[in-house]
Length: 126
Image (cartoon, rainbow, N blue to C red; front, side, top):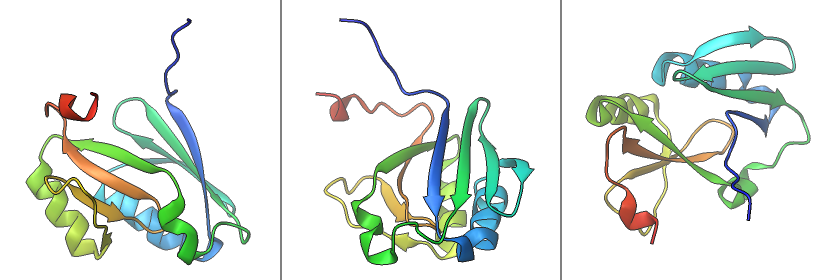
């Protein structure tokens, strides 16, 4: 079988009215670089080589459906400081079976797990 992996580009469809809150969270809280801004799409660079586009769309999932979308993982060199910035921003914490990490819902509804850049996560692989 051939090997496959996730690429370094993704897109997320989000409600149009959350554009400024999304820009603030990803730019100011997570430290992402906005590489392109437009009325209906923003591009962000996360870290050295991951890019995410936010497509602002009135037909995006409604808030009651947000927890049913994909849950993703972000890594930080300084987890305690990053966690504090995230919580101070006012995100919604999400309950998970994994009590050793912060799970939180960002503007637009995506759920992230915060982990350390060099953390051993092998227990989640078996």
